Image 1 (cartoon, rainbow, N blue to C red):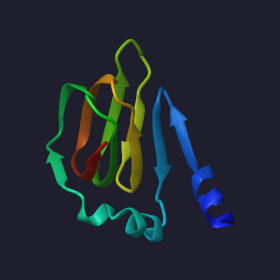
Image 2: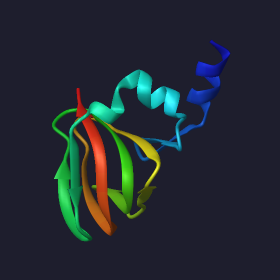
Image 3: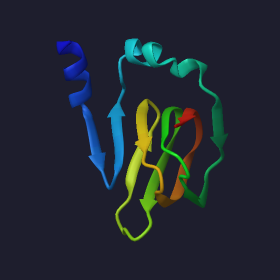
Length: 105
């Protein structure tokens, strides 16, 4: 139980986006992340709206996500376990091509 609490505490939340840096492989295995569908894109910039909560794990890439109405961006990169809330509209500014596992709830 203590390990689960410690693992949770390394997740940070910024502008509604939750990021956990380099989660342990045991957590990824427990959640079945490696079996989730994959999605990728080249460096680009595009708007996106989350019609459902999305949890994803970046295998490769670097992105700055700008939630609508915010001048501030949230940086995510390879090794990050990220949760985007349902209903969030944002702009993805991809500087390094992305490859990620994802799951919608």
